[in-house]
Length: 252
Image 1: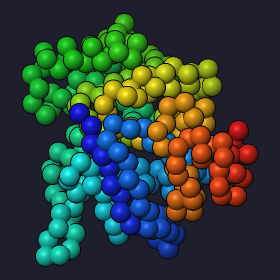
Image 2 (image 1 turned 135 degrees about the horizontal axis):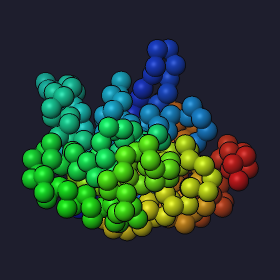
Image 3 (image 1 turned 60 degrees about the horizontal axis):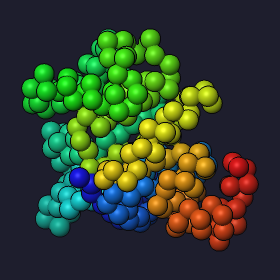
Image 4 (image 1 turned 30 degrees about the horizontal axis):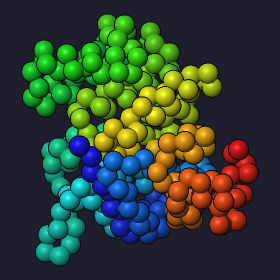
């Protein structure tokens, strides 16, 4: 299953520094959206707002038909309880830059822990975790610990862990930025294999080749606003905006 995403007037500041300035973005269910932008453009904050890791100052996010992190109360948006937010996050997988695996758990335990916590029988969760590890090419590492794996392998485990709850949306925050160059291809290959399999993917990355090959939509964000968005062939090969052309000339 997959779900569409609607972001409306997403506004966020840290202190007196605006990070998002009224961003509106629609992402269709089952598609791949790549978000590009320079450091400090607000792209990671926008991604974290989708599953309410970063509450918005103004605006809202809808995944499927459900407001995320808030509800309407007397005409205003009111924060949900932490329990309700955690329930929603089970629908929205998140893969971080730095893996965030539990160092004291084996790889199998890292992948199976969340389903068990949410009520899946342990034997079933472990069986599903083994299947996911096989899917990302790491079935032989089930009993290893994170410290025994390379960065690329740890990131593939993080993807398997995110998939374990069968999310409708999967968010990637610069999933290759912490990796040595020779390890990037394996991780991008796993993400590429997920495209078209039903899950809605949103990927913050500087991997232009990946965006050109896999994305249905490319969004270029700068200074908290969307400068340009559209098909990869339009945004990456024939950008309309001078700021987009300048950015691409630096990263290509």
